[in-house]
Image (cartoon, rainbow, N blue to C red; front, top):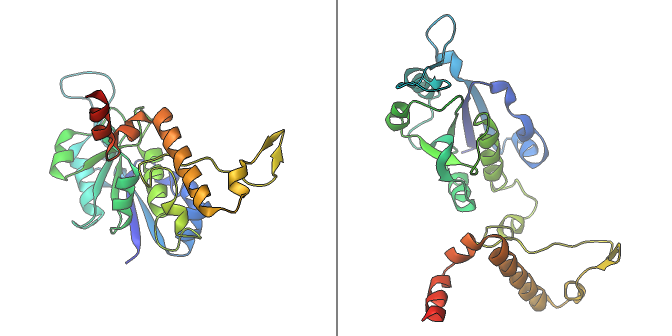
Length: 239
């Protein structure tokens, strides 16, 4: 079964966009995955193709209507076994572990929010899981959906040249990736660390692990604190 992404959006012409080039684009052309971008406005019932209305209780902006969006979701025929996602800044953070979960399934249906948000009733009625790509607000969910899809597609079998490329990188073991180097051996007075050209694979592996741990401790203390054994070590030190 081909992994499939179904995107519900007010701007279907934004797709495939970046997903049509590089690894994702080659895989799409090869049939390793498929993409369908559907216009939410196709489910509108009035002659103006209205999809939004003013917020109940007052306030600025507009809100996507529950009835229109529900009809769009139902028309997509996504199947109950597929995840139903809503890209939203208040959602569950998109992590590599979540990406890995989504990549092994049939592929998600993704709703791209717009305006001030989506009527809460359709979120509940259609079991939409809200997912966020970061603590900031975009104009809409399309760019966020592209990020999620790209992260999933690169993990699909046959997309990357070497399977190890997806196993030995940032977040794969709860760590940031170690620094990388290549030719030339000298660049503006800076050399490649000698251990990396020593030919001693065990020492190279140890160096990379130590560098990954050091980077994670400094740049992402939240990831470091979440690693198994860190709380026990901290408690032992504190005691």
